[in-house]
Length: 400
Image (cartoon, rainbow, N blue to C red; front, side, top):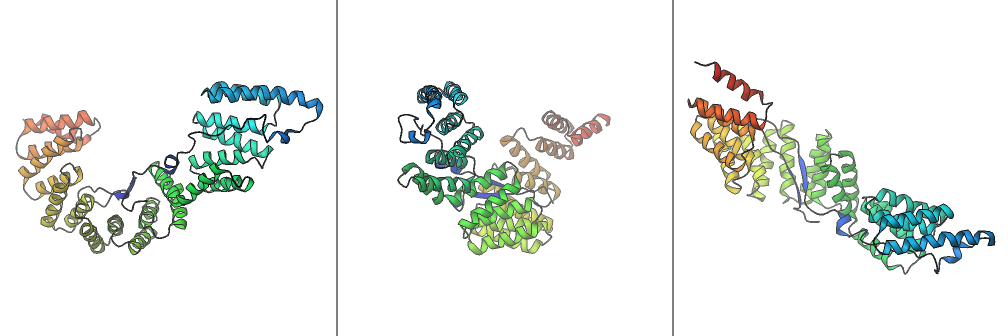
């Protein structure tokens, strides 16, 4: 897991506090990285070393053999890639002989091929209810659970498969891969939960990742961000500091700590952490932008302008820095400079209603009523509910 692959970004409104911290991840989840479910074995029912498990009374043998006919037909169709038709044949087999674990296993494979993992898991579990020593069903269940992010239970079932058949290479490989990436698996899953707004599940997975990898600053920092989303800011601050103890050069932890400290009212400590983040990574545009906003809040307008300019020098398209710079220039009397920044911002992002609205305000301040009206109308076209733009137009219309 790369230490710099995940970081938190918070944008600020002018003179505001840091916004909600969003954790962004760009690594593929472990379920993709391990290539689970690309193909699962079909356990042929007959002839097979498993045939002795189906020792039935003579009067039932014909029932078993009839079910076996449809099971073989399902196997053939599944090998040809026709999962839907295979499912129908397997279901016919189970209608005849409902305690056929191999068929439940193969039904699970068919549903997994259709991407219906919950159904597949149910069939694998049913196979294991009938035959708890069915190593192939343990392996396939482990694959499906891992694909669903249920890492610990997947490991248990891989272990069961290997216990039953110590030379079962596929189960051994799956177990080794999952154990070797156990911490990364929990971490990737946590990021996926967080992106989906499932904060509590993300926190649980980050904690599991730390049990495996307790010296990873990135995990501490993202766990802290998740806790902060849940309103536990003091615990988040503690964990950001822990991330920095683990890796003092991990800039995102300093950045996130600065945001949390600012929200907590400790502006001096926040400024120190922003400076440290920028010192570690001079191209950290989010840190420069937030530091500029903090300097503005401390009434250090000149230094704030410098930070915003440094941010857009690094990334000319970074909208929060350019927007904040434009407003601060206007506030300090450089309306023309503000207009220049807003026009540049609109070049990069012509569908930003707030940029059009602010440009209208600036043009109006310079006496350009026609230009201002055009920008207010553009803002309303992009965001019809923007009441401030509508009010400005009303005022313009009422002016003689």
